[in-house]
Image (cartoon, helix red, strand yellow):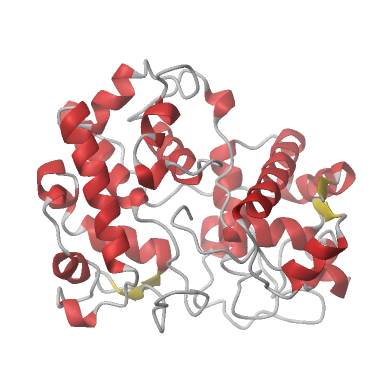
Length: 340
């Protein structure tokens, strides 16, 4: 149905080796135990509601502009807005007691420029409130309200029985079979020194729509099933089983690129994510081949990666989609999901 293209993984890895992923601007290295506990809770709650922040692509109650605004004083969108806006109330957003009683009006207020609920562009509000409540209740019931206790009881391990992923999966927002939110949470906290993991070999790239789109267009995965090829190119709705198969194949291909490039999983995850939300974004044709960049003023890729951009994607020529319309026409799977 969909398979890894090893040779193309090596070609993309070659381009990646020529670049350096800059430090994540949102990493906060705590100075002591209290700050570590705050960061563990904060990221657990933020990542629990980190799904579908994009514009116009929603199938149910889409936000007309997507999550965006000035928070504080700098225009940003999606994940950047989510983090910058919630950081203004970090102590509240790191409190299991406070989050257990948060309602839609308060969430809208936090995710608005001026704390006015009506000015927020966040969508699927009740879904997100339910996710926050589920995590807060699980932390209060099983871990004394502290995500740090989850880490300690897992022994710092990701995969063993009683490991972090198993414990996180007991909370509905983290129950994704491909563990996108769990991978993001553990990777973020490991990089910040809050949750140093004992088995880093179990960290994987976060499988979201950006990673799928880039993987399909670069050709590091090849679609062998004609029906799936048509569904992806036509953005047809697919079921969970097909979605999981595509995501697993992309995950395997990303593992190969990481192997051949020598970068860390955390670095690769940032690299492919910024590429997908900039050069290979969903609301315009990919910036490669005959198309020159029209969005350097809002591009996050050139901020996240040491790449001297001349108006073309850094993979131009190596990516199959930059020279072949067959690959350019691919899109990520079209599903309604709370997982990414």
